[in-house]
Amino acid sequence: MGVYTFVCRNSGGEWTAKQHSGEIEASAATPYALQRALVAAASAADSSSGVQSSFSMVTPTSAVFQVIVGAVGGGAMLVSAGGSAAAASGGAAAEAPKEEKKEEEKEESDDDMGFSLFD
Image (cartoon, rainbow, N blue to C red; front, side):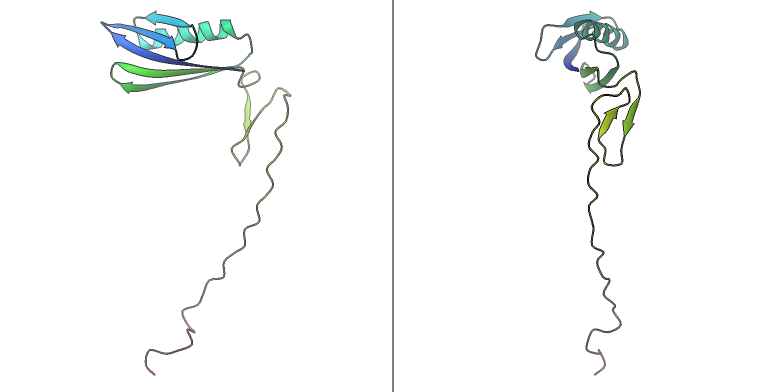
């Protein structure tokens, strides 16, 4: 599994991207075309299956783009109630979190406070 984070900037109508800690770079006329080029470059660098991506605009002329390669097996992902994810393709199964026992708090009744307002 590989995680690739890119800093994207728009200058003069052209979008450029540089990998945060790496050597992958790309440029395109639109943010969408840039995302496609970066996904293709990250997929070529890491041959694992399954790709997820996230593009977040920071300002009108800058953005952060993240590509996760090999995050899911074949595109299917199972998420438990605890929020942990396990690949459906038979990867190492995540251990189920132990159920926490929550003690129910007794609600105190306002009926019997041990004194009366009118005594």
